[in-house]
Length: 240
Image 1 (cartoon, rainbow, N blue to C red):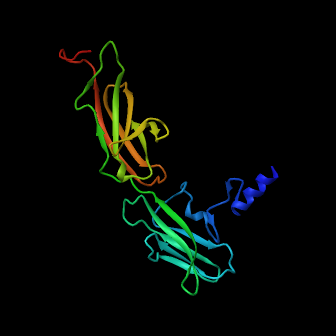
Image 2 (cartoon, helix red, strand yellow):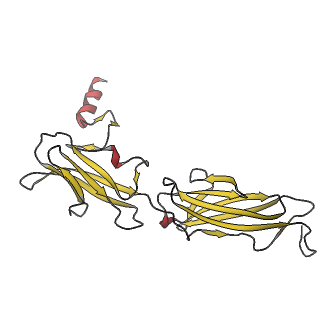
Image 3 (cartoon, rainbow, N blue to C red):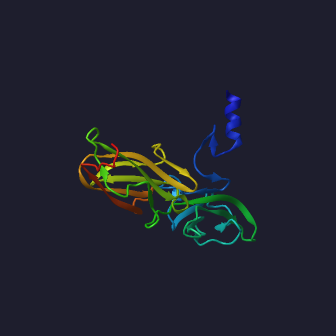
């Protein structure tokens, strides 16, 4: 037991018996602002602070892109930190990789720490699809006055990251909200799909809306609404 504990401490000074105390490597660490408040995802633009754990050690902290070019940042040499401006390279970039590095006065490279920003984006309007909705009146049959319909809401998966939340509203009342953990939505052929059955019990027009928002960003919404008509007295040609 004693030998195992000593070995565990000797392997990494920042990891104790398999439990990590943060993103730290050698003489560098990343502040928690690099990962919160969205479970490791960030909204562009944001910031990420790299810290030299030994403030008295030689060298300044600098941020670079993964290709080696200098990134946009605010470096403070006296306290050994550099604040990276985390910006998405384009509108629908899923992630971007950076390197925090100690650079000595001679220009030599010191300790490095990799950081990958995962971006939140979408959804936006005018791209939501709704399939398999009725094109004419729905008739109530005397034997069954409850009309069950199947709704399929779709959204392109490349236009939202990390995933959407679908909400269905019927006649002003929220019918349900569904994320990928609910089991009601799935991703197929580069499309997020919501498939649900719902019932319309009243005669006349009903307003059915499908909303989609980002799992983490509540301010982005896309909406599709359709009027569905339920009628009594089906024609003779209609089979109940």
